[in-house]
Image (tube, rainbow, N blue to C red; front, side):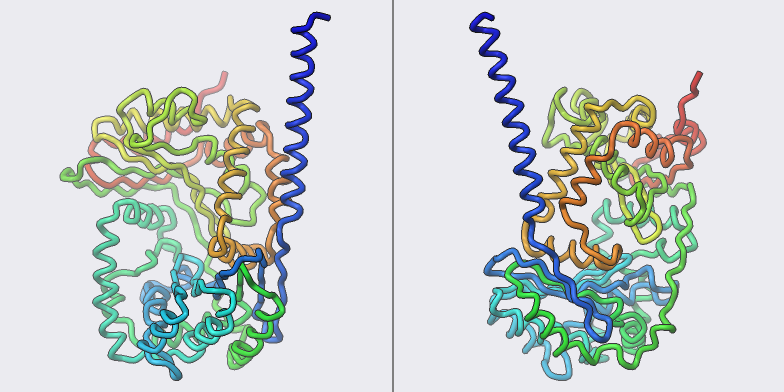
Amino acid sequence: MSLLVRSLSRFRLLRTQLRFNSTQRFKQALLNNPETQVTTLSNGLRVATENTGLQTATVGLYIDAGSRWETESTNGTAHFLEHMIFKGTKNRTQQQLELEIENMGAHLNAYTSREHTVYFTKSLSVDIPHCLDILSDILTNPLLPEAAVERERDVILREMEEVEKNVEEVIFDYLHQTAYQGTPLAYSILGPTKNIRGITRSDLIRYITTHYHPARIVLAGAGGVDHDQLVKLGEKHFSGLGRTMDVDSFPELEPAFYVGSEVRVRDDAMPAAHVVLGVEGVGWSHPDYLPLMIIASLIGSWDRSVGGGNNLSSKLAQMCSETDWMWSFNTFNTCYADTGIFGLYFVCDKMEIDNVVWNIQREWMRICTLVTAAQVERSKNIFKTSLYMSLNGSTPIFEDIGRQLTVYGRRVPLAEWNHRIDQIDEDVIRRVATKYIFDRCPVVAGVGPIEALTDYNRLRSGMYWLRS
């Protein structure tokens, strides 16, 4: 055997050993990830923590209640309440709340989504007891003064004006309005102007007493958090929560019904066309959730300010880098308790909309029929990387704990996610893509100079390829 052949053989053996060792180290690292400890208090509130040994921590309340639990007349109440809950309690004025948080150097924040409301603090680990005292006070003893309610209307109306300048926010509201028309998932999170002007203090109190039951709340902590300490603090501050509530009187979640449809808001003064093209997806706990996430990674995203070339993982991104048709695109897989929307949001020149739609549908059909094992493997690696990187820091981990406890009833370990992803191959991707994309009625939302947006009937006919 020549020296060159022996050298090549040794190189291949070394490369195989390195690959095996790195894979084993990666799997071992997943198994060594800090455990998520969960304890259920006597009143049903769940306490869940992941101690990563940091000097800082994020603790807060993840509540299974959002705009989807509202009615047409009360839409906007959950978001209004999120604003009002920091306006003072029976024990602290608004100024005292702000001073206590500032003096600790901590951050107090909140947000509302269609299915959840979240209140949380980020602070030094030693200040967790103080932060829990504040969180429990604002949740169990809010004053919600009438004068503050009146003032906050103008704040929310100004916020709505700012949101309406963000085309991406607006177009996804339109997408939900047409995809889930006639159901609560069609409502916007902020609510209509008419409701904001009419919401009263009693509406806010009614929302709390109806939805903020401990069985629907997760007290989550991540970072430098001691689980036993958080359990004791949870018992101390939240043991009286929900005693007067009747679990049997909980409002049931109204089913969401997807409708293939379209909404077009033409504005020729805008510089570019904004379009979302989607199909019905699945809920968080559905077995096809992960394959759809891999498909989303397979199609990918692109922005012309970043650029790229023929080595981009996404074929659609490769096409974009070779033409001037698109300004940007982003693939999404938005999930809810029982449904979801899988699709692609793009921004393009008004004269190229039809070309862009045709290429998107061609890529969708290719994935349904011709996707290769190498492409799927690369997309799995991309998704794994984004998944692990998204959990970098105590706040993302806190949110992940709260969401998973709410939607799954447990925290799924990273090693389990890794194993599930490894089971997905090109046959699974083709099957799932065909099930949810091939010959399905799409939902379309367009904003801007969209005169050239493909007619819906022709767009619908592009959702399949004729097979011989």
